[in-house]
Image (cartoon, rainbow, N blue to C red; front, top):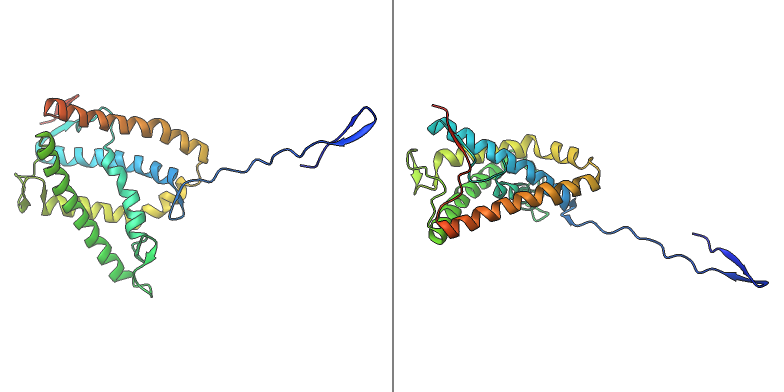
Length: 226
């Protein structure tokens, strides 16, 4: 802004220049705004809730709340962050932004990507399931009725199912959807994250507290379909 000129008792005084307002820097994760990754995480949390209920219906004929008041399972919200940080692009893998291959090798890159995602699913379920049981005395899920299981918390079928599904989303949906989300006005994305995103976190925090206090997860509702 140009300096203003003020007349005061015959003297001409230049008014001080107003401080220029600099835009706040946005928190980014390897070039992508944190808010949009968080928004992507909310979508993944909803997909996780749907996927778990689909598996529950297929195996037991039961449809339930999955121990949450809201139809979101927050650990799934970490998936977009993990994919973005640890893998980058299925066609050209990058670990923390550093490309693994000097020259792009799509087939090998995608095979490694699929293997890493399945390993992440297998080890993640095994670790989280046993941790919950050790700390809270709660068994959140049980794969004992499935073949080729490793304890009740991990097995070949869920690893292939969840891992394969995550890979397909990462391969064909991740980049187009993230691009679409980034077209959403930043302030609108921020509001969604600060309201719905926080509510999802609080819902999960209450689930954890309920486990600690009562040695059982909260079951708000359950419907037996057959």
